[in-house]
Length: 252
Image 1: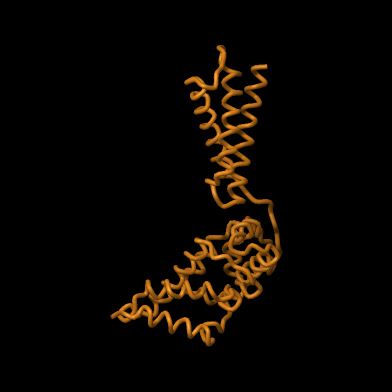
Image 2: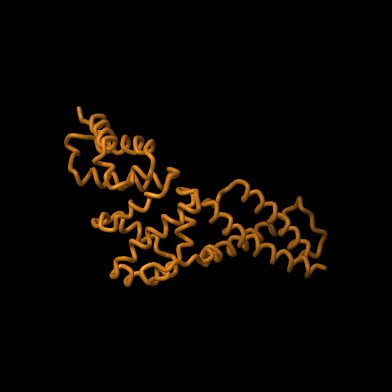
């Protein structure tokens, strides 16, 4: 019976570690209160099973002996979670674009909070990888990354690079009607706007931080397909927003 308890405890610890990483990846948070509570309760059960299976004396929950086994259980859980996180991979979702088999599973999951609608999110992701792999040199250079689905850094590098307009990735948001301004999404928009404002060299006449803040707040009010269209900045609404933020950020 004691051996059964030890084996059961070890199996549970392994399962808890695996499920914790899986659930956290899906929810984009390793500190979700609901998950943490369930994990602690399950680890308490595991500590009791492990302690009562190993201890030769009567095992009690309210004892220093229990805390020792709970600590041991927690350490094993952390080790399992660490290995699981290092080897974690979403179920593959392969699309063939421009002759390249691209796994968009991680890209799809990473965009879930920003684009909640799955159909629109898939169209967006397929559009992005289609534009990227259309560049034969880029597709050949990063073929391994595209096929394994580990190409998020490539997109970030392109968006922050000097040739970002070359790929016209903003056009892919044309079919998206509902975008959530998550903290990460807003951070990316701010970073790009700050780069654009710095390139304009207007810091002698405008506070570019105020300019950027104003643009972000105004852009949040604009439908995403309108905001990402190639003509937005030349449109009446685009010029109106820029004019308002330009005036607000003028140095006195």
